[in-house]
Length: 565
Image 1: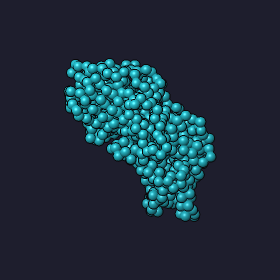
Image 2 (image 1 turned 120 degrees about the vertical axis):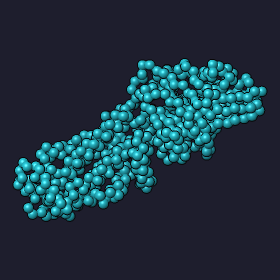
Image 3 (image 1 turned 30 degrees about the horizontal axis):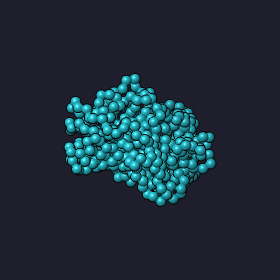
Image 4 (image 1 turned 45 degrees about the vertical axis):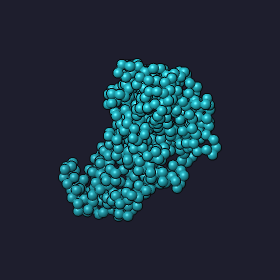
């Protein structure tokens, strides 16, 4: 029996099994549950406001120790403001960002495609970012009412040559307390600075707690085949704390996995989807309380992640300030790293497993460096394969050398099989003795395969998740490396490469059933790869082609003349 070949069969089956298991974990969100509950946004400190029991009412109508704050003095309805920068077009009022178009990211690969709309208020695509205040026994603006545009201006555009744009709102209570909220937008940036300044011109101290939250209805996914990356990309809420690091919750487990009531210093909360996300990032020294909720709203159950805090106490004649950042946009690795927020890079959800996410991050770093030289993501993948093959050359050389020597000794192995007939035990012992005498390691080629398996899995997640490759063309018919090959050219090439590679490998001594299985392996993997992202198949075709050339050379070098029987 050829031990190496058997090992390869099981190794590749394990790869396929791991992929299917992981895809099963990351299925698209199911229909909303029949019953919903609301988790209270509480904190260890009893002075921090708790949420009301009415779904969706918190913090618009919070209660603390049985008391209800006085309603805001400003009108309930505030005019919407439109903000346009070089990368974003937004509709917001002081408490809610209700529409966000990502101007540099078309919804589809068509030239006439509208930009991706990340935030929206229509029931089917509901997704908004909200922020307001609750006050213990006093007035406060909520995300639903209170803030109005300062100066009455409702249309803002980042001017040519300007680096930033400020959009101010204001709320004024009847007790002399004023809160000025300023949204600051920066050129070519998907981070919005949100600064709240509390000014107490009244006669009594004012205490309040800011809250920030993201609320959405799970989006309907666009299906492009059984291996569509969007179907298996994580969809749900995520958060980060210094104690427990990166955590996440899929929509179908929002309630089942229990309530979230976590007090955190720094950290962040977010809602993730394929290629894009939104996240609230409080100050690094701010102590806030994270919670989840499933309030009922227009269009069905909404999924909400909230952080409450920090609290401020403002004496008469004094001021206080709190700031946070709101990320609204694509999962751009470099831009996310530039924020210097611990754990925010995990929003680029390469894998649920930190080690695989780390490997994927390394691969993307190398891929990005190559892209900086060649300017094409497809050729960058080809370059990445060359570098990986170069790094693994000593191991691969040992693998192909071992296979070439086994091929050279096929006549002697055939003689042993004929000599021992059906006595498989004696045949195996004789064959192992031959390997030992001729210094052939039958499993010497397994290590490169073992090393390639995690690389293969990490590369799948990296290519599927990287927004940098979204709609990125390679050549000719490959117009999107994150979608499957539309004409199955690369999968067919892969089948041919696997078939030729198979012909170079020795088969003498293999069980007939195993030999039959091996004949079908190129076809099996061809069908499986037909639905993989084209970038991943390009990687595997390039890897297989280089491996075939290397193996052909080794066979020529070490087995030109068959060993005499």
